[in-house]
Image 1: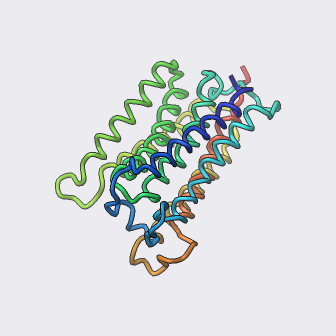
Image 2: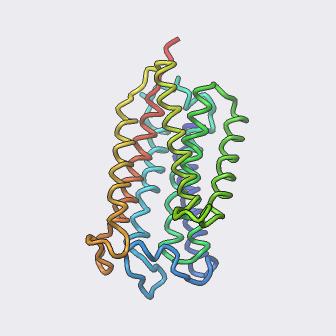
Length: 263
């Protein structure tokens, strides 16, 4: 399967983008209601409401395609790590990473409620992978259990996201659920490293974490009313958030494939 990963990912990307632009053109995402409109960039009158915040998601697509190219063309990869134990996982990772792009674009391009749901699920898709893979490698779980955990996490995140507040507190449960699955994923990655002492390039885990932390820091600059917000500029801090998050997906991939099983 690995040798065909690049071709499969390319075809998947083309199909998903075709569906996305068809949905965008035909208005399948619904009427714009301002969803995502608070991320600084002023909404235009064209097909793409927020160009900078939309097209910056191409970083995810590039990351997924490049990861698939590495899997198909780099013969020097040591394929003894847990990432390669279940043949579908490397491809699954590439496809999810590509999917983050159009899912996030959906909200910024349309400012519609349905687009916002796609945007939140882009976060859930990736956070759930981090958690389910970390648990699978820590406990040496089967493919069936990995998939079960993955979709259970997706469902629970969407249930959390269906609430706007809990107990009157000013926070969004969907974002809290995303943060929780990511933190649990990182926790079990660390526990796995401490318990099993794998031969792995831990520096990539550090690079991934730093990329995401910097991304989260600049994310706060991209809100309406922030002193760094310029609604009419082609440079948008929320776009930087997208690009840095795309970079973190690549570093996480490098971390996964660097593992070696020596016994």
